[in-house]
Image (cartoon, rainbow, N blue to C red; front, side, top):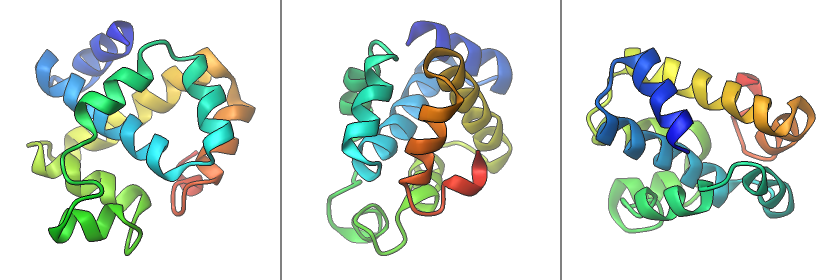
Length: 129
């Protein structure tokens, strides 16, 4: 995951700690919302993804309040991730290249088909791949 975090730092200008948290939030969303079998295949090809998702995914994705409603399915998918990323201090100008870099990295490591299958299992995300 260090390679991905470095790439996100280079593309977005975020500091390393903020980039790590942002990548963890994205991975947490994928893990929580995606088809579990496909996500398992994807994460197996992204060493460290499970740990990073667990470390940075507990910021309210399933808790109460607005984030609980977003992450719990009321709006879910990309909207939940955007809300969590903004709460972590990212702007929309930083979120777009972050998402692009995570997808590019995932495709390089796991292939287009698997990434497309995972994205297709997350409401609202398939339009981004």
